[in-house]
Image 1: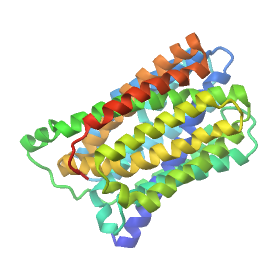
Image 2: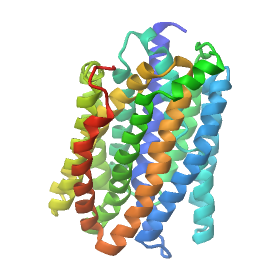
Image 3: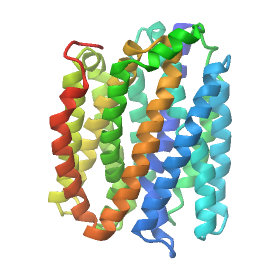
Amino acid sequence: MNQKKLTYTFIALYLLPWGMQCLVDNFIPVFVNSLSFTTEKTVGQVTAIGAIVTMITQLLWTSSADKAKNKGTVLAFSLVLLAISSTLFVFVKQNMTTLFAITILFYSCYLVHQPLIDSIVGESYEKTGKSFGFLRSFASLGYALTGLLFGFVNHQSSKSFFYYVIALSLLSIIAAKLVPDSTVKKMTKEKSEKGFKNKNFILFLVFTLFLFIQTSMVTTFFPVYYSEINNNIGLLSIAIGAGTFMEWGLMSFLGKKLEQTSPKTVFLLVVVATLLRSLSIYLIQNEYWILISVFLNGIVFGILWSVATPYLTKILPANQLTGAQGVWTVVAFGIAKFIGSYLGGILAETFGLRNLFGIISVTLTVFALVTPLLFPRKKTL
């Protein structure tokens, strides 16, 4: 595949699935909370179940992709299952049993795109002549554009976003089928195992665990909290889209610079920005000014997505990149999300939604002091 075609393929791979992810991340909690038989605790339980299922299935998907000649084929299959499970949310009448059953099916194939696409692009992005951050920025652009599109359309129900998820899943399949065969050569078992014993990788997973426990609580419960302040999910979606343009801008114009920054510094910035995000939700009660937190979210993930995969490519063998992305996804969106969502539901029900963000802010303050200890002094990127 020539350089130009490869670049456009990678752009499409990021643009479409992350548009779908924008809707799922932000409106699954709103959908669950809108059901007559649910409470805030149910929102946490559904998100926690999704995290457990992600944790169990993610390594199966990435293991299959590592063995496959073409990772795009594995990605396409996961997207077919995602479209089917999204359809069930729309057309099956919901009660507690069906809600949990469809949730299990949905999350068994959701987020597969994240480690697979990052590893596909991580293998070959240098052939495009672009930085990884530049290409990864189109995930943020897709996230932003979908949020804006969804926000400007009149929504008849809280489950309307599933129609967009179905459409984007089907379009993503086309992009997945354009992925070239993997060029990474298989290495010996000894070298493979040595990579996962890397101290820096283990410390990075520790960082990921604590960071995403906090971010999962914010991501899960901010839409619910905002819907109580201002029951206008269209406005929230527009704000999410606009805020994600900041994420896209950071990755597009500062991606290369962020890759070259010391891990100790750049990952500390991620924690501090997350702290400011949570603190702004706690302190600001105005229905419009509180949306500042959405723009801070763009800073958090604009930095994180620019540097996470390049950092992994430097500390692990090339043939382990997909597996490493899978482990990272399990920790971030499985273990950490389960703990954060379940614990967040209990804390929100016990202390109230607003106070939940105050508790998160205190925890992140302590975590900011510890973060520099988790990364080497020397530049690794």
